[in-house]
View 1 (cartoon, one colour):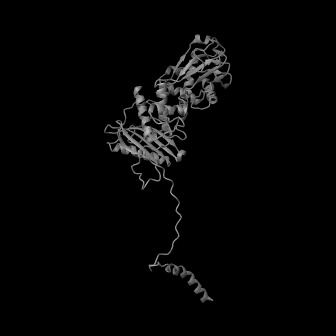
View 2 (view 1 turned 90 degrees about the vertical axis):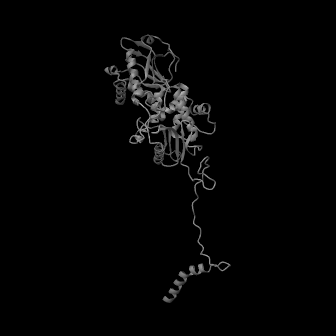
View 3 (view 1 turned 30 degrees about the horizontal axis):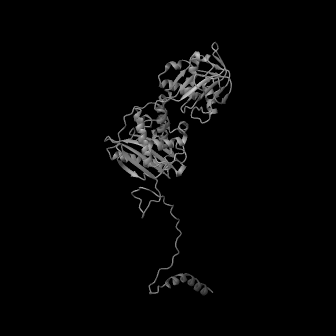
Length: 453
């Protein structure tokens, strides 16, 4: 039995080898044993890439993560990769919003927020027997502005409102998209007894920044006794004070430094939304309809532009700024100097102050998106304009690539050199608002001096 088992084991072990040796070609040559093919997963489909020097019919890249266009001020191309491929620019779309705003309103434009009253006014007690109404679409209206309004109303003699606080449907405050919540914040901030600590701090810091010691000698306060409602300005209400925002160039500086999506969308609403921005690109910049996509004014969601198209936008923005006597640093963040998206990124870098740019980040959309659009300065005195779009990958790694590319461009030209720039705090920029009040005589009128908003 043991002998039989041994014979069977030998047959099993030697059988495949014998079969393999038996594979002989008709010519008598011995062929190797047959090995079944391995299952290899297919490669991802290759996208059609236009204008890439390294993309050939024989060998195309599986993924194209980055699109780059670098130019001198003269328009000479310094570096170019996938510059005609469409990417998601993310928050770099805010450059389109800024361009449209400057062309529509002008750099010195101020957004108005009007305050109205209904009913009667008792000068002796400082009481409005009626409602306080507010209307406006200022994207930058904030706590310190509300306290400034309370101070102005006090100077008009108004201390108490027996009725309600009525906010128009498009009024917003503190970057809140809700008119109701904005009205509730205004309600609390006007009244010193209800004022949040953050509002008190914002008021104090704004006065210190402006060196307005006189304003800090008193505590502005207007108490509204009723509730907060969202409604249109009622017929018969009369305007008693109008708050004017900081100039548009300062509003844009804050918006672009912090890449504030709320401010961008609010501003975009007044420019006609995505359709209005699309008209700006086709009419003013000369882009062809259908070759780009604008979905939002902030850059959220799915937008599409090529690096070459964005370069045209950036050049148009620089030209618009020049017409207003401004430079890129007047509305865009200076890396490592201004607060916001580029402060920490360049704070300890040799390139601090040598880059002026708008960032863009979408961690999940389109598989991860990062953008950097702006200009750099070198020790040899060169100024280069650049557009860098990255898509489908790690945002952190994309930023490292972008910074390495900028550093390489500068090192090839003697290293970085800072732009001439005198920074101003964001508190000063946001606090430089104005108030124009219809003084005591207007409180005795019952028809608004301007049409209802």
